[in-house]
Image 1 (cartoon, rainbow, N blue to C red):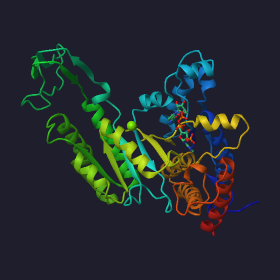
Image 2 (cartoon, rainbow, N blue to C red):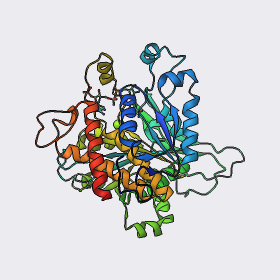
Image 3 (tube, protein in one colour):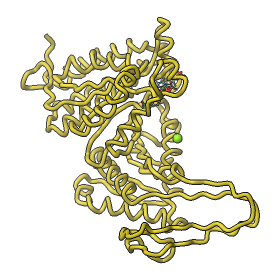
Length: 434
Ligand code: NAP
Ligand code: MG
């Protein structure tokens, strides 16, 4: 029996007090998932997993009930770890002979947990980001409601008058932010009508919105996550131009931070509001180690910029944080379909399992923190060091070959990389436990 000093009590497996919700998935990531669990996690942790099979065949069998049950389990347990899943389109309905095109599991889970998604790159010393100053992760948090994405737009055919009209619901005493001088908070009883543009010819027109509830919930999730990661929080908008719309975002964000000011001070982290163009300029010269909260459109654009700047999809992790303090960890990439089809043909694959490994370590660390079990959180750290350590020694899957310096002469198979990680993890645990 191997003995690891990391757990002083049993010196065998580290006991995890409370269960984690485990959400299995599809295709290549489902194969990787099982290998990670069997070779990297369960040999070392005495861990109860509440298993939900979100693989597409099972979602179809139970008419997607399993997705809702899994979301409820994350709500109840506080921590979940999810494998990538297929969001079926017409081709997938035919391929898997589905009863119907089930909705995106991530969308369903996000709807139930009311969460915000944060994407965090996994960094290694020899994996040089395209931006030279980036040495620590830049985490992007994207507001996933409203603005451009729930807008109504329109091609104006010719001359005419464009107006914005708000009609208060009869008897409603709630807040209505007028476009005029009236501050938010006053109940509107009269219809509000604002002139937008006098068209003298054809053009385009768009109306977009957001809600205080959604903005505040986004801000609260960002505050939670910045505190949990102990990183500086940035938020950028264009309130010099959009004094009311973006100004409302700025104010609600400031309010969410103000409520937790004492915790920010205790964690030694700061909140910075800046103009979005200033934020973009600064982020390219910054070493990283920040959470960049972005409004919906900015997050769509800048999360892709940051992801591609850091290198590979296989090195991007993702976490859904709900304002109630529930966490769901996953890889940012999909099910890596092309590699799966190669695998089905019996060909060897070289799929990067690191983002999936970090989904597990994220969940395990969070479980340890919530349970007050430092040894559990330390295990997560050991597995992350073992994995990144391999990359830093030039032991990588094919996707990283072109990205690391010096360029390695060969690359590992999917399973070969996981076995190398298992071996190095054993050594890491012996070293830290000694
Ligand atoms: P994908 O899984 O993200 O993979 C796209 C390409 O990126 C791969 O073919 C591969 O490039 C590269 N790649 C991604 N992850 C990699 C890894 N770990 N190691 C090495 N290379 C990696 O997207 P997809 O294959 O187009 O989508 C498959 C399914 O994933 C879809 O049905 C979609 O619905 C689903 N999806 C799920 C989630 C989620 O559950 N969170 C997110 C996105 C997509 P090469 O082929 O060049 O090697
Ligand atoms: Mg995008």
